[in-house]
Length: 410
Image 1 (cartoon, one colour):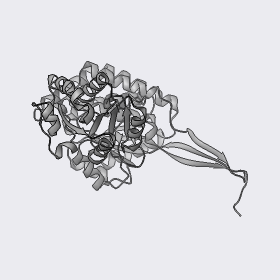
Image 2 (cartoon, one colour; image 1 turned 180 degrees about the vertical axis):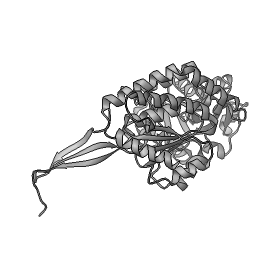
Image 3 (cartoon, rainbow, N blue to C red; image 1 turned 30 degrees about the vertical axis):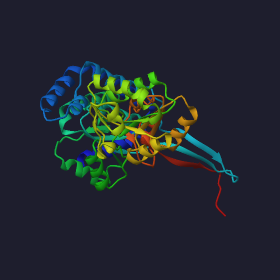
Image 4 (cartoon, helix red, strand yellow; image 1 turned 60 degrees about the vertical axis):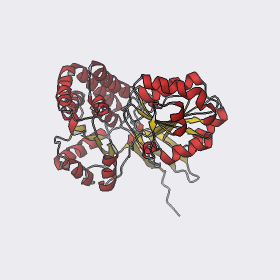
C-alpha cells in the first residue's frame, strides 16, 4: 500500500501540470479501450456475479454489467473528456488599491483515495473524473466487484499510458483484504483526501479512522412529497419513476409523503400502481385504511434506505409537516415536492436541508451525469463543500496567485 501511495504521489505531480488536451486524449483513449476490452470486462463480471450468491437483489443489480452498461461506462468517459478542464480556471480576480493583482485559481487536490462498494462502473467514473481534474486516484472497490474493477482499471491505465501520461494516475488496490482500507485511512502523507461511497458502516468507519479530510456520501433516504395542489397524473408518474426506475440507487425514493387533503383522491391509484410493479408498501394508519394490503410502518422505516422495492408512506398535515418529517428522518441527500403551487414549492426548496431538492421532478435525477457533469463519484451530503454531485470541478481546490510590481507592506 505504501508503494501504491508513492506511485500515486509521483503521478499526481505530473498530472497537476498536464496539458488539458493530453488529459482529454487520455480519457478518449480510455473510452476506446473499454469498448475494445468489453469481452474481458464482461467475463470478469461473470466471475464476480458467480460469487455473489449471498448478495441482495439490489446489490446484484449494482454489480451486474452487460453490453449496455459497458457502453454507458465508455460514453461516460467521453462525456468527462468533453467537459471544460477545471484546472487553472480563474474563479475570481480583483485589484487592490495598492495595485496588487489577486486571482483565485483552481488546482488539483493531489492524490484522491476512493473507497466504494459493489458498482464496478464507479471505477471508471472515479478514475476518469480524477484524471480530468489533474489528480491521481487510488481506488479500492468492493471485494464483490474485484474482478470487474480490475478489468476496467486495466483499460483506463492503457488509455492513460497511450496518451503519454503516467498510468499510475489510476491505481486499483490489488488486495481484497479489509486491512488495505485501514492502511489507506492512515496514509495521510500520501493521500490528500478520501471519498467513501457505500453503506452506512463504511462511511462511519472512514469518518472515524481517516487521518485526512473526507468527502462523505451518506445513504440516500430520499423523499417525495405530494402537496395539496399536486397534479394527480404528474404525481403518479414521478412517484413511480422515483421509486421503481432502479430501486438500488442512492437517488431512489424511500418515503412517500402526501397531504391529507388529497390522500383519499390520489393515493389509492398510486399505491395500486406500485403494488402492480411489485413494491411493498409500509404505511401509517391512514395509509393502511386506504390500502389494506399495506404493512404497518415502524418508526425505523422512516429512517431506512431500503434500496429495494419497499416504500414507506405517510399522510401529513400540510407543507410544514412534510418539511419537518424530511428534515428529521432524511439523510440530507435528495428530496422532491410535487405541486402546482409555486409558493409552496419555493418554501420546500428553501427549507428542506438536503444537498439536492427538486420541484416536479423525480429524485432519480440525483446523478452527476444528469447534472451535465459527465459522471460523479458520489453525492456529498455534508454541510461543507463539495455538496451534491461530486464531479471533476468538485475534485479541485484553489490557491491565490498574487502579482505585484514591487509592493511592500508598510
